Image (cartoon, rainbow, N blue to C red; front, side, top):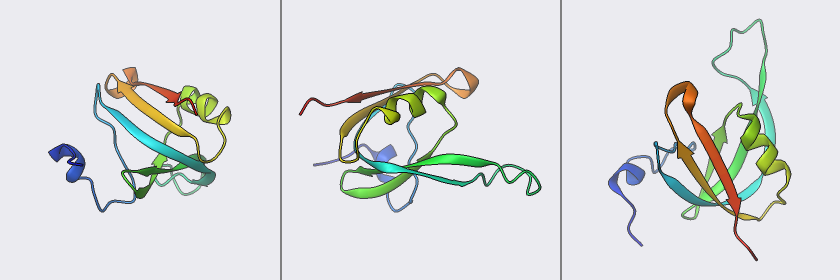
Length: 101
């Protein structure tokens, strides 16, 4: 299976990124809380880190999106999902749809 060049350029990274209007199929493996690398050290802010498999590679996704958190809260580890991004910057919205078993 061939993947678009923009996806191939992200291979090898432990994180993944979704471009505007792009959809990615993944397997959800769970959630952990990690220190936010972008907040000031004195804040020690935590953020959710979702573990997913995309095209057989383990990847992490960190986002503060409440909609993403609500969607993943309904899923069990091992669920196959389609993640779609629409918008850029503060207008970004994600949809997570579980595939039917």
